[in-house]
Length: 189
Image (cartoon, rainbow, N blue to C red; front, top):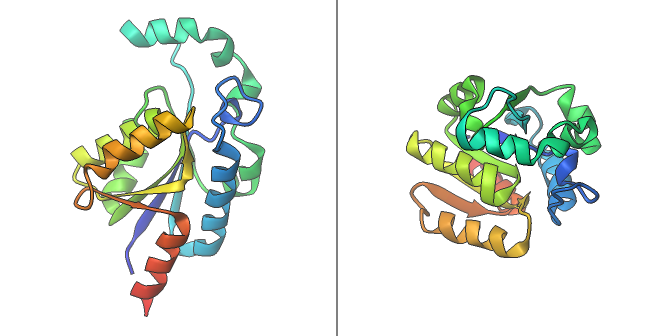
């Protein structure tokens, strides 16, 4: 059986149904991620990440943080979605202030120990995509779980899938969570 890492990227309130940066599919993705964690149990390593702005950021990040100051200072917006409260008591949560989750040393180390990294979370065309590209550059196989990710709109979400499909099947495998679970069951037999 493969040793996979499930990376849950930035499932914060700001991306939920009433969030300032609402990703229309975020609630559905959260439910699928939670279900996947329940079904895999101890057979998979899980890491959560969140984006929190860096007040000392330079260059374009300084401008980005200034433009989004109201959201960056909103404590509720930056908290993780309540649906994951149980999982967050069991699995680590690491903070980043860049798009790629591989900017976090603990995530990079865990990714290198895994056979594959399953990408889930938000925002598909931003933090999820940048994490995918970073993993690919590190030579780590990626499984992009389409039903466990959400973008700011369907057009950019599809564009992200198109880009990553171009890197398939060597670098990226595109799947749904059910396809992933079915594959895992077949290889376990």
